[in-house]
Length: 162
Image (cartoon, rainbow, N blue to C red):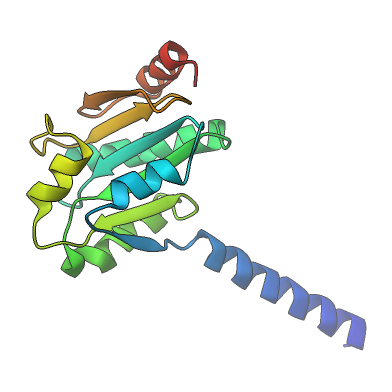
């Protein structure tokens, strides 16, 4: 083997490792104030907040749809929020990675008081999952509970002009 071949193989290996690491989930701790932090970090930008749990079968069905949605609309800001506690973090990351959603902004509840976190997001939300919030550019929001099809997501985007 000549030096060019070895160098090319090394570059390909490093590129593959970098690409794999880039898609791995980074999960931020969602604490009191995080909801407002998410909105403040996205001023005048439409976004979608998808709330889920590792113990929610409908949520896991939604993951494939969210992956397709992200592929179809990579410009759409999608924020994922797992309502599970810190002990579920390895499972949260595994699910996110297996559905190729690691490139999205991912959060997980990190408080002893999940009721308070839910209330900060929406006082009218009592914990049903999956729960999706659609925000237009002015951050007016619409919420939907339950699993949704790709067509239902698209219909909601059309209504809000997202």
